[in-house]
Image (cartoon, rainbow, N blue to C red):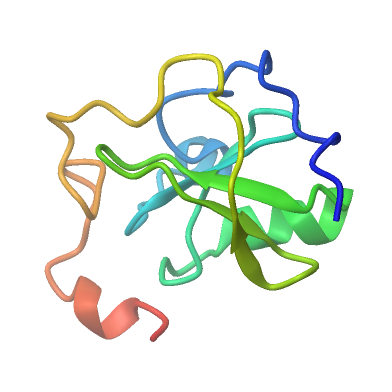
Length: 115
């Protein structure tokens, strides 16, 4: 396995999931593509945009975009991997709730997530 596809200089595409933001959606947790910086929502989230990004681009490495989390995932090998430090910021704003963003998460969100 080669981590040479990871681009440590690629800045995050935003503070929240690009696709959810575009349609007023919401997410449970955020993931950052370690190859291009795309921010997408996790597989527990209703829309699963991080995995959709992998399927559409072949970008196999993601990193958590949650405060205090530094793990990487390899979609192809289906395992956690160690990766380099990435361009800041390392996570969504700590003041943002999870799920988020504030004001867009429905009251029955637990019923709507993937388990």
